[in-house]
Image 1 (cartoon, rainbow, N blue to C red):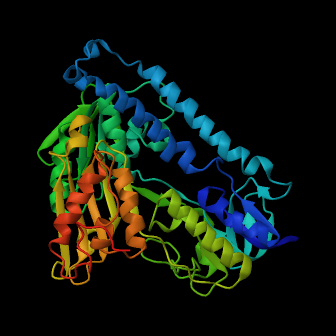
Image 2: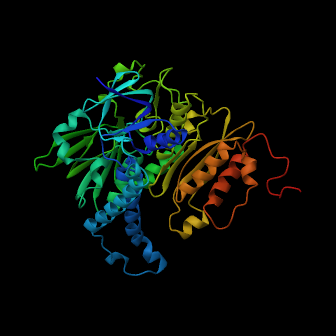
Image 3: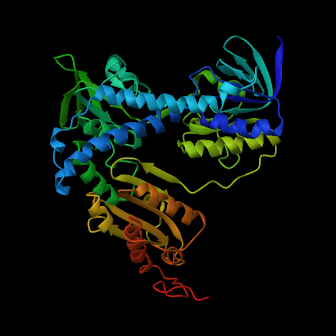
Length: 470
């Protein structure tokens, strides 16, 4: 059988695949991209971007509840046309997808993209669904992931919504259970609740939003639980109610709803790849064992990038992994790159944040912890959103910043400050000698840092309350 010869083959044309391509093409390599699914990236089509559009609609409508505090009248008369709102979300979504396509696959030269799926025949040989064979010196797998739905729930599939379907809804259900209160579950669950859906949230864990700090988690459960009921610590079971709707039971609790929003995580798209033919070692999740600093699978000519590895399923991480895999696939050097400081943001209201090392990863004997409640913070009071807690972590001996977990309004901005500081290996004292304006939410972070500074052993040569001498 005739084979097409290329230097690099990229399986997948999402965020990771496109970033891989951005390193391979400038290197002048003969490359092919193979993707039989919808183009435009998960982020733009069913992920980061349309979810933030829905969150913004929900947040703006929800703000009517505090208008009376400001002397604004008529808030109780405001209404939301959910059909119009969802159409607006889709219009924005389509705009984001069009931008991705116009800057990528729409401009691909002929032959660069094969609109099919592929599987391994040998470690260097692929076969597409039409039978075309492609022999590549190096192969990057960036096939992404999809939402998990347990097999036991298949009989209820028509009444189960995932992110793949949510943004196609013309209107919203009257009631829904959100199963899985991680990032997506909290964001969509809170948004639906604020847009008039009777929402119940369920998670078999006792934590939400990926939090590991028990004090921050306690605040988060309390705050989020004021918006809709949250049941923790028991798995959800589905059955059919007498009226044809879905009955959801978790422990001693049960509710009958119109729809279930399943947010149980995502599973990598690997089944059709025939990884056994690639001759690579797989971990217990069926994913090739790889080096996260080179993205190389063992010592093979195969690399991973993006959600397929399941380790850091975030757009900026997928981009970094694509660039690492692309560079190494193009050069064959297998250069190891230092990964960026972990940064996780739940765009709930308030934001839920993890930066750097999370609480569960730290040694309590060698770690200092600083805290600041949001309740008395002036800027938060002005915004009528003074709920939450900031907790920051540092090495007790050196004062070097290690991480943070928090729930706070505008936490997305505080998270970046901390991520940049941790990556630069700054100490608590270094941060406290930076300028802080007034009144801003950064002052809440400043207060947490002062509390943290009092608990570390190494202090700055210059008192932190004074300017640095020239």
